[in-house]
Amino acid sequence: MKKTKAPENKKFYFGSLYQWALASFAVVTLPLVFAIIYAVIEVSHYTEKSQQTLFQTVNTTESSRIILESLVSMERSVRQFQVLNDPEIFKSYQEHRKRFVGELQSLKKTTRDRQLQQKLKAFEETENQLYQEILIKAEDNQVNLTETDLAEFDSLSKQARELLAEGEKRAAKEATHLSLIANQVGEKLMISALASIPLALLLGLIFVHLLTRPIKNIGLAIRNLGDEGFDQPISVKGPKDLAELGQNLEWLRQKLNRLDHEKQQFIRNISHELKTPLASIKEGTDLLAENIVGRLNTEQQEIIELMKMSNIIINDLVENLLEYQRSISTPVELNIVQIKVPSLIDRIVNEYQLPLKSKNIILAKKIDTSMIKADYDKIKIIISNIFSNALKFSPENGTIGITVQSRHDSTQIIIEDQGPGIAKNIRHLIFNDFYQGKSPKSWNIKGSGLGLALVRHFLEAHGGQIKLLPSNESFSGARFCVFLPQQRN
Image (tube, rainbow, N blue to C red; front, side, top):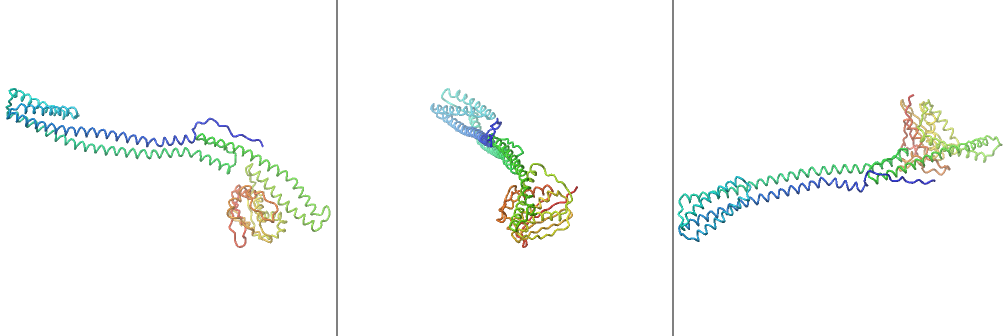
């Protein structure tokens, strides 16, 4: 047979399955990455803001404390200088004031609160006026402070204490504000996490669907090859390697399709080729049996009977092959006619008289006067195949039961035997094409495995069905029940 090459790779517009997996992993992790980045940014902003707020609050409080201490030291030094008139004490006053001014200037630069800046500015101007007056009065190394001057010191001390209290109050307020911001940041992070996780799962499901769909299509295409034949083209879209696999399956389908056509052609040819020599053998056997060429002795008659039986069996095999070939190559066409079921069964039984006599089989018939509308040839093949199987597996001196019951809308035909029956592990296989069970030793010719397959095929064309019934006390072997609905013209 000429070898066929697999199809060459075509240009694909998809990456490989490996690339799809990497891309899906990257896309699925994007929401989580964004959530992490957002969390880092929010926490960083919060940390930075809290540090700035904490620094400013602590700085304001500490500076206010130092300003108050410096101011108290200044007042004490001035009062001592007024009493003792010691230049060193006045020098100490100026040093305390230098510290006071430096801390005040630092606080003015670092604070961002305009209201506080204005208070600090007014505070600075008041102190500076007092300092200028003290300098004027200290020109002669003597300071005579009036009650107004001392009241100014008291006012400055009061303002400094207010600044310190306000700083502490602002610290508590900022701490509360930071707590609210922390709660808001936590809520934002929770929302981003709750949003990113479902989004990641959704993206994951989408990519799983996109990745598994071509795999499912490949599985479906393989099942279709087994269930529906090789006529339906296979096309798989998806990642490059899966699409290549789909192309290889299409190549395999085309090859199997060609092989199937060749097989059908072979069956058709060999069946027709066998018909002619079988007809000649049958005619010659009949002539010998009728003593046309001379009278036969008893042993010769027995040989002729065996030849007739073998001819019947082989003829059934050839007929099954021909019917199978016709049934799969063309749609089943039904020629609906009125059929007398008892007459049809009698005809089938007469065709198998020789095998029945050779095995001394008894028929137990319960047939009512049934009339059905169906295709005569197809129904004959259905009953013949089931009956021949019962005959084939029946033991010698056994009994085959044939029961026909009619109802207003259907007819039920039961054919049962006393053979070994059908094992449970192969019951789902007996209606498959070319399936062959274990033949009895008394049956010299092996079947084709098409009998029950044709039975099911022709029954489905009639809208009927066949069932395998459990054995009973009378019939321990196979018990087939055929249901035929009444056909309407």
